Length: 156
Image (cartoon, rainbow, N blue to C red):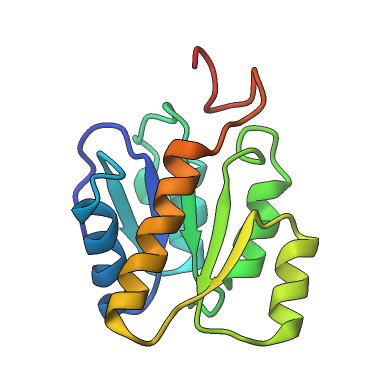
């Protein structure tokens, strides 16, 4: 797990170490972020997002540019994390991408009903996985724009 150094731009919530490593490699190799922080379960994600528990001393700003969230997670699943994140004023504008192996229509529908910004099924093939993650990272951290005054968009 990476150490907290400087502002975090992307929160990766992924319990599979192999998928987490590939995701971080894809984002870093395309210079899409200065800082990625990886947590392995839903409760850790909530603690990180709201600066509580072991993250109580984490500075809350700047706000994250992106959350990459798996659905099947220990403690709290990804849809529960999404529900909490989208229900709070200070986090509801943070773009959330479900990056998951689930092809279940029910998971897709529930994610969009809860306000996910994008739903991506993890490609199995290495090169396609790397391309998909880097394309998503490029879009959400560089191309996408938040409304004026939204948390994370102050002064941009």
